[in-house]
Image (tube, rainbow, N blue to C red; front, side, top):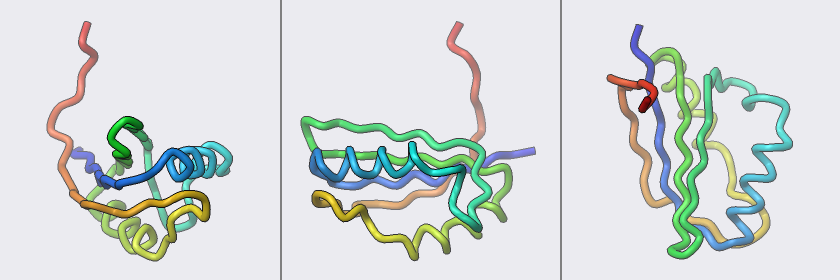
Length: 97
């Protein structure tokens, strides 16, 4: 069965990156209505780029979560602006070794 990923890129300063990571770490699982399997947060602090990739077990779960994510606000700390949102089918995943 295919999995899907929602990949969102932000421009964010240090304070916003730290605030978002803190919010995710302190959360007790995914937000209500988000049936995520995994979340990966990537930061390039030198360029102020933040990428949040969220994995889902089905396209339906991805679509339902997108509506929840659209209603969310950025952290209160720092400055953050969404640059792009992309959705993908995961076609291959394997260990490198």
